[in-house]
Amino acid sequence: MRIADSSKCRLLVYVAAGIALALSLSFPTQMHAQKGYNAVCTSNTPPTNAACSLTTIDASQLSGTTICEKIYSALGVLNVLIPGHTNPGGVIDARSITSGLTCAANETPWTSGNSAITTPAIILLPAGEITISTGWIIPDRTRVFGEGERSNPSSAYAPGTQIVAASTLTGTMISLGSASSYPNTSPTVYPCGTPGVVNGVCFGVSISDVMLEGNSDATLVGIANTSSQELSYVNNVNLYGIVGTGLSITTSQAQNSGPYSNIVCNPAASYATASVCININGVEDTRGVHGLTATVPSSGSTGPTAAVLLDSTNNTIEDAHFEGFQNGILVGANATARSNVLFNITGGTGAGPMTNVVKISNANTVSNLSIMGVSSSGATNSIEDDDYASSALLITDPYVGLYVVGDQIISSVYSRFNTSRQAPSLLSGAVTVSGSCSGVANGTLYSNSGGAAGSTLYVCVGGTWKNIE
Figure 1 (cartoon, rainbow, N blue to C red):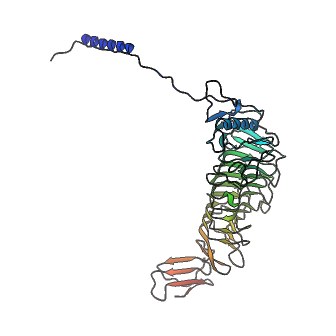
Figure 2 (cartoon, rainbow, N blue to C red):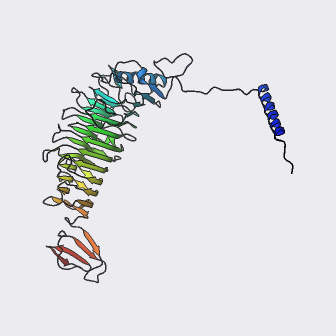
Figure 3 (tube, rainbow, N blue to C red):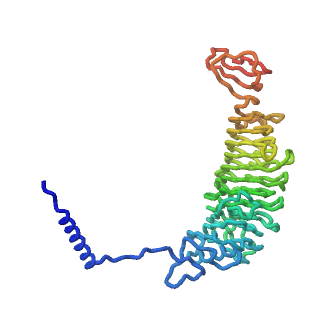
């Protein structure tokens, strides 16, 4: 076998490399510069020979002394770049604004004087305390994101975005759209629908990752949705110190909205008996409330009547925990409530005592209500059913797997099915029963699947099993 001379191999490699270099110099390849982002606009007029970005506008570079003024200016730039209410919108980044976080009276990100801009946009708020004196009405197809809720509202240096209601603010802090026009606008501007159309409906309106802190006004509402439907939602919001209603979802114009998810609510020590975390009334077919923790430092019967008022149809409330309220969820106290589902609902006494985790009112029709997975965890009752019979049914079981209120069977009588020993239900097995039915509610039926004719159906009457078939 012959071994090639290594020096000759290296020489061949060098010659090949030299030929390749000479060819590249003789026939150069054209190079292209990488295309970068468009310029960030600081005025309505783009720089010479440059295009303004349609995707991101840095609000800190725009005119204005407050965050509301700067965002309004950025919306003005966006409206010039892609005019028309039907434009796709862009991102207004206000996260680098660290001063001027107090908005003056009659000033919001969408209004200034007698003018309003409803250009759709994604608005990114900075960390810190943003104080507002006039409620914000978020227009059609606009999403507002904070830097996350603040776990400690009393700390000026806690991370996250906190929107604070000034003592002069009345009404609602944040509205997801509105059937009314922006105040004092000329010509009149509406936040929803085609410009100039009264009672328009909004879509794709949301607020996320913020804390809202209220004042002592018992009529104040934290967030209200009366006009926004599909793709409109609230997510990761802490409702703190709001003595009135934390989240209000009302009117048929808010149908198909939601979900309203990951919500924390604490009216704080200034609570009133009528303080409510969530009020659902007059709206059908929402995407539901998914994830709610509602606590209040009460001392018993003086606590707020209910954390959640459910007075509507086709809604779901799941993964909810309550402490310190007289009732966690109060169903049908103010209006008819049909076809609602409550799932994984727990109570507790950490912040204060509770009477009922769930209460079914007899003030209005409640039907086709499904309650699955209730835990009292120290509350007096898991479920109170005031519409059960001539007197309220109190279920004190620490855990209730299923409690169902069905439809009307006869006048003023609605079917019920449950897994509690404290209310009549349907049992089944393959053995014959007799004698005492202690621990089972009177009226409970037992079906013996292994019994012969005449020993298949029993009822618990006066503490004793009675064979009825």
